[in-house]
Length: 252
Image 1 (spheres, rainbow, N blue to C red):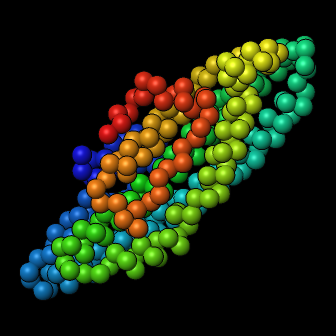
Image 2 (image 1 turned 135 degrees about the vertical axis):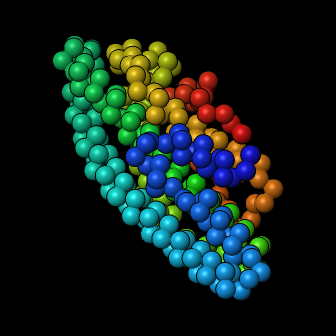
Image 3 (image 1 turned 60 degrees about the horizontal axis):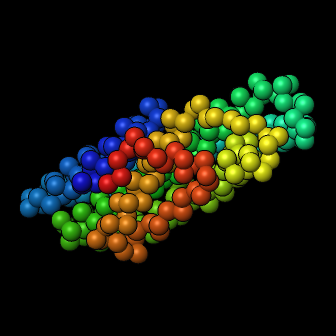
């Protein structure tokens, strides 16, 4: 499957409000075709338009990524405080559980949705970086230009590419998931913790599956180079592995 179709699949599987924030791959491909035209005037104009659109796309990625990450930081901090309050009041004998059922139910929904949005944002960064690399490679191949290297070097310094803070939040969220949603083994060793089923598994399962799909694409790529992203470090939570079963997104 070509990258354009994979990108469309990723866009279709993301949140509706995010779909116009991804790379305008088709528009860039059209400009690449025009740029490779033998007519110098068209070639020059299309080349300038291509660079202009690339820069506009990078600005779009940065604005969206920073806005979403700031929102996730705030929500993550608030969720941690709520979880800490619940855990502090946890009675070893389970006598206080009735008083916290509604709180736990709400946290259950919020933590799964928050983690899902974090994974989606990480996927957003990865997919758009991969798309930029592929379209720049096409441009250089068609025109004999040398745009790819300087653009990639610039992209590596862009906010949307820097996902260390986001990855740390994802890992912290997974620790919270394991604390609030004990695995069967944990339940056996600690019978006083509640057995909670995850009701909002849709967004969670779809985003994890999207990353699994992207990881598979990279692993099978025959064009891996120093421009490529490193292999994904997917979460290792038991809860996450349970959602990988019967994935609604095919692994390519």
